[in-house]
Structures are given as C-alpha cells and as structure tokens.
Image 1 (tube, helix red, strand yellow):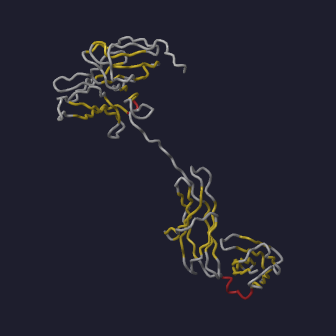
Image 2 (cartoon, helix red, strand yellow):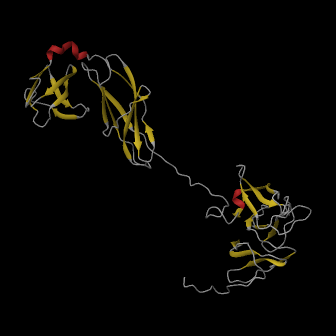
Image 3 (cartoon, helix red, strand yellow):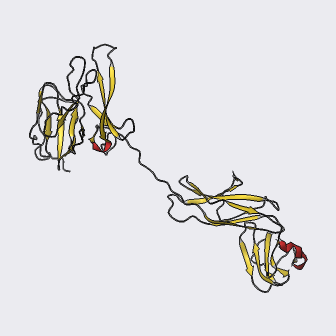
Amino acid sequence: MNGEYLGGWPKPVNSWTYSAPTVAKNGDQYAIFMGVSGEGNVFYQYDVNGNVAPGFPLNLSSGVEGFISIADIDGDGENEIITDFNLMEDGEGFIRAWEMDGTEVTEGFPLRPQGLTYMNGANFGDIDGDGQLEIVTLSYVQNFSPEDPVYVTAYALNQPVENLAFGTYKGSNDRMGWIREEEVVISCNPVRNLDADTYGDTPKVRLFWTEPEAGSTGNLIGYMIQKDGELLTGFMVEETEWIDNEVNFDETHEYVVIAIFDDGCEAESDPLSVTVLWDNVQENEAAFSLYPNPAKETVCVKGTDILQVEVFNMLGQCVLKVNEGFENIRLNDLQEGIYFVRLQSTRGEKNLKLLIER
C-alpha cells in the first residue's frame, strides 16, 4: 500500500449516485458493479483494471441507486444481478434482474412492489427459516406529505440460501446478507469410576472417583455432590474423595458427583446407591482394640490374624498404611485430630475411631 491509484483507475462516471460499488465473482474473475442516477448509461460492470465489461453499461430509462444484490435466482448455477430502479409506474416500483452479461431476466421479473424503490435495493435472506431464500424490499409512495406510505414486501424465491453471493452492503463479512452467530460447542466430560466405602460401627460414606478424561473445552475447577436428588450447596470439593458424616445405619442414599468447569459446563457421574450396614466384624469387637486411645506418638493394634492397618483422616484420605509391626505403629507424621483406622484380617474388616493428641 503506497497510496497510488491501481492501474486503470479512477474511472469517471456520468452522474452522481448513492449506489456503493459491489465486488463479486463473474465466472472465474472478480467484477465491480455500480449504478448511477439519471437515465441512459446508468449501470456498469468493470473488470479489475477498470475496463467496462461487454454488454455494459446498461442503457435504461431511469437510474439505479440502491445497493446491489447478487444471487443465483433461477438455480442455473450462474449468478444474477438484482437491483432497484428509480422509477414508479401506476403506483408500483421495480426490482429488476440481469444476467452477468447484461441480459435482463424476465422469468418472474421485474418485481413490482407498491411504491418507489429508489435508493433501497432488494435484500435477500431466509426470513421464515425454511432453508429457502426470500427477497425483501422497502418501497414508498412519495406524496411529499407526512402521510407518505412506506411498505416492506417479501417475495418467495424458492432457491436455497447457498445461492446467495452478496445480499446487501450490511451484515457479516461473509456477505451472506445477515449476521450469523458463531456456533460455540461446549463439551465437558463427566467424572469416572464413582465408588464408595462405608464405616462399620461409625456410619459414614466415603465417596471416591476418578477425574474426567481430557478433552473438555473448559478447565476443571472442582466437584459438587448431589445426594438423594438434592445438591449439597455451600461447598466445592477439590479432591477426588469426600466423606458423608450425615448418614445412619441401614439407610440407602444415592450419590452423584458433578464436575464443574470454568466455562460454566457441568457434567454428572453415573448415580451410585450406597447402604450403610452394621459391620459383621462387630460381633467380634472384643477381639480388636486400639490403645492408647487417645494416642500421642504410637498406637498398638491388637486383634486376631491382622493383615493390614490403614489410617484415614476426616476427608477419607489414607495417611498411613502398615503391613507389620501392629503393636507399635508410629504416629509422628500425623497431626492432632480424629482418624479412622481400618483393620483388615483373615476374619474380615473392622473400623475403629482414633484420637491423636499431642
């Protein structure tokens, strides 16, 4: 861009005009279309070098000053030019159409809206949503009075919207004649592998799950818990574990874990039903014990045929696991608080509460 005229330009025209030049393809080449006021040579087609195309200018009895629309209006695979006309006869105006070589289209044309179409042109669009083009015109009867009537008229073209090449000088940059919203597809994957543990003599439900698979449009920011069809509001879970302390023995609850993304998307897990039952190991409660309890630095686990001891915090996270030395389990790395100890033995499983104090 150096500010110099393109070769062959500017071009003089024989009159002033309100018709903005329209650039559209004519076959394999781009062409420039423009109408002017007056009568005689009032409609032009230029090539990119400013040469007037064969068959042009069109010598007409009145000017063409509205915007220019271009579409395949007869379905023959070739575009046609559609314009207004600065003339009204018997109270009706004109919307005219030409082939790209300047031959006037007479099949169904000219359209005769009520009133004058001067400086308005013909707009195209799918106004009823049936996938077919319609032509919309604005016309008026100029009586030079406050009562001048104005009309909007629509005509069915019965051609698909894809046949539109240039509908108006306004709208989106794709020149389709209307502003189309960009389709935004939001996707978010649900949480996976929702499962649960229950605690025998202390009725609790520990939910645990796997994060959603990659591929969501938003970023994962946390989880919400739905219990028995109601959302437990007021908190957002960040870890993939959560403990429900508000349950009783012999009750069944249905849980759903909902992944929350920063684009506003939410994705639910499959529902999981959980029943809290008295642990069968409770019949042998005397065979298992923790002492001291409360404990400080160590705890001793006594029981029959113990295989493994696991210590969980209040969030259901396993913070300690031992497979031997059950009579002297060191607690140095654990903070003060309440914990749950799961005892695995050859006779089953037992859950006990442990309090650590310093």
